[in-house]
Image (cartoon, rainbow, N blue to C red):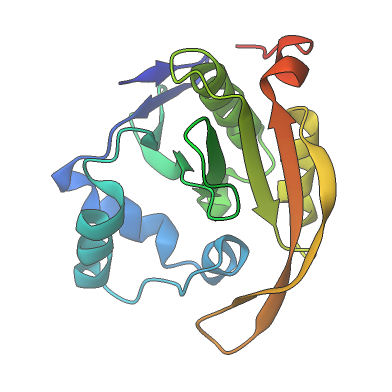
Length: 181
């Protein structure tokens, strides 16, 4: 399933996305904000592409329409804290060169329309780290509400333990807020 916005195409990952995935995943700030170790090689990106991204029905590559360049990823995955069928957790990553241009807000809005529309979700959650104010701004712009802090929530690849700022958006809340295209 492809999702389209004014500037973006959200499409399923393809087996030939290894180089594009590596191009943004090797940057330390991207990995730090997304919670994973920066990719060290094309082989590592290829393995992650096949293990994590391919054949996932609600995980998309973010591609710029203007030049067809893959600039990030976004997806709705199982929420490990809420174990029932009509909830998913939103996750995303974006190449450093594309930060601050509204691309992620645009992608999130498209995914929310899909999640609350065809997927029939009643709740979408998201987390970000306290030291990632840009991600928090994206969530708040898209209507998410702050739920609280889950302290010492995640052990990172480098041994650091991070808190999670937890956010949620219900179908009812999203229905009252126009999700622009």
